Length: 306
Image 1 (cartoon, helix red, strand yellow):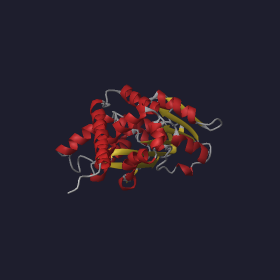
Image 2 (cartoon, rainbow, N blue to C red):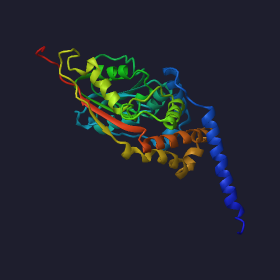
Image 3 (cartoon, rainbow, N blue to C red):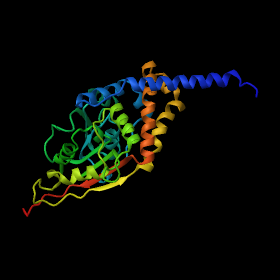
Image 4 (cartoon, rainbow, N blue to C red):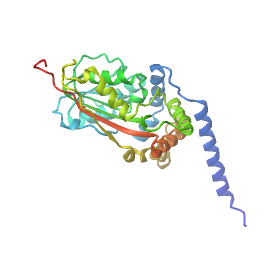
C-alpha cells in the first residue's frame, strides 16, 4: 500500500492536537455550581469574550406574547445580553425589563440596545426579584431554570410578579423525569459533566417544573387558596432544537474569522466549550435531556371572594 501524502497526516495530527487541547481545557476548567455568584461569574466570562454573542446572536423561541397590546410590561428573566428583550420591544412594541444575575451581561445588553427602544436592563437575582407583586402583563424566561438551585422558589417568583390574566412563557433544558426512568451509570457521569461545566445546580424535568408552577400559591388569580387554579401547558421541542448543538460548533468552522478576530482567549474558549456541546447533543438525542416549554395564563382575580 502506498504511503499517504504528508498533507493528510499533518491534518490528522492537527485535528488530534486540537481535540487534545479542547479536552484538557474542558477537564481543568469546570464551572461547578457553588452559589448564585458562580453563575454570575460564568456568564460574566462568556459575555466578556463575546464568543456566544458573535456566533449565536439574538434568538426567540416560543411565547404567545405577540397577542399582548403594544406597551404591555414584560419581564425577561435571565435576559442574557438582551437579544430577546430587544426583539420583544422593537418588533412587538412591548415595554421590556430584562434581568440577569451577571453584571457583565447587563452592561453588554445596555451597550447593544439602541436609544429610544422601550427596553431596560437590571442586575437582579431571579430567586429574589426586587419587583412588586402582579406588576407585569407577561413574564418569560429562556434557559434560565437550570441555574436555579430552588426550582419552587423560581416558579413562585415568576408567578408572583405576573398580573392576573397575564401570560407566562418558559423554555428550558430539562432532564428526563426520574419517575419515568432513573439515570443509568453512564448517564449519571454525563449529567455530572453537564452540571459542573455550565454552573448548573440541577435540571428539573418537564413534569417536575409543571408541578412547581401548579404548587405555587401565586398561581391563583387572587394569590389565595380560594382563587381559580392555574392551568399549565407543556411541550417537548427536543427534536426541533436538537440540531442547534452541533450547529453551534459548526458556526465557528463556517465563520472562523468571526472567532479569530476576537483573539486567542475566544479561540480557547470555543475549544473549551466543544466537548460540553457534544455531550449536550448526546443527552438530548438519547432522551436523557429534553427541551421543555411551559405556558400559562394566570387566572383573573376572584372578585366574588369564593
